[in-house]
Length: 139
Image (cartoon, rainbow, N blue to C red; front, top):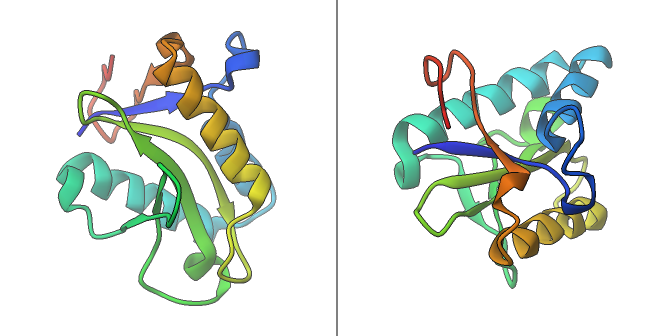
């Protein structure tokens, strides 16, 4: 499955997609356990698509999350919020490290704003994932 990294519709000219800024912030904060878990989850989604073992549907929302099986701590609280694109690819939006079970409402609001913009045709707000995960061009 191809992974597309979303930019906020009001900030399409941002230097980097939302998720990249958030992952960099985790690295700066020394949250390497959560960071490595998130990278592993993205890799699994890329490799296995809908068969990814971390996929969970968010109840009552058109959003999904990547959620590890472990509980508690940095690794267990790692979450990535995303949605399915019309062609079946993934629109990756943002991430967080949660202490409890409830997602941060602001993270979900941003994810919904990106989804709505995508559905309205602001697809240039997503950029192909260009990492070692897919060996180069993701666009």
